[in-house]
Amino acid sequence: MVSGSSLYIHFLCNLLFLCQFYFTTLEYP
Image (cartoon, rainbow, N blue to C red; front, side, top):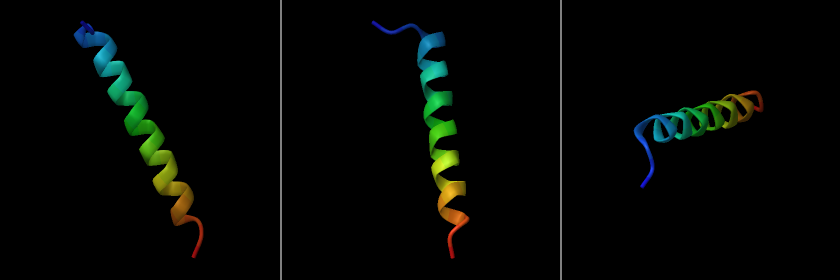
């Protein structure tokens, strides 16, 4: 079973990836 801390880190990495994808798509008109 996955520990809470690693799950939290995985969630942060996912959120960072989504934010990066969101901002890169905003750069294009």
